[in-house]
View 1 (cartoon, rainbow, N blue to C red):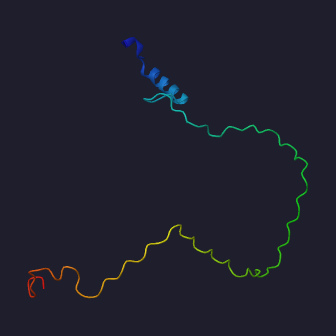
View 2: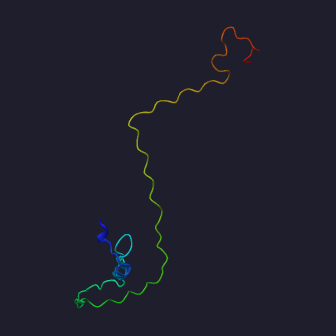
View 3: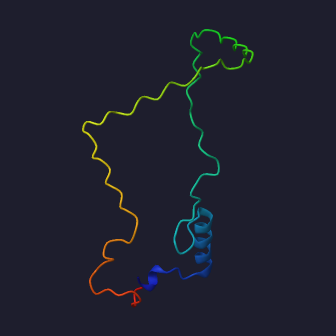
Length: 115
């Protein structure tokens, strides 16, 4: 860009800046225009269609008087448990009371460290 491209007269430069400002083109980033129009655009709507022939609205039904609930009776009986397809094993025999196994090991003397 040579020197001849720059305006030499300061009044001429001021006029150009004023013109750009009036057009919204001044500043480092160029054009400053509002992003949105001040008024939203008018939306063209189709003319309203006449209502179709519908039956007239029915009157709401009046509320019925409250009545206590009817008795339901006893609940149904529970079904029996399912039968086992095989016999169950007998219960193990109970241990007799007294000292447990290992009490009579040979060499054990009363009064030891684990008495």
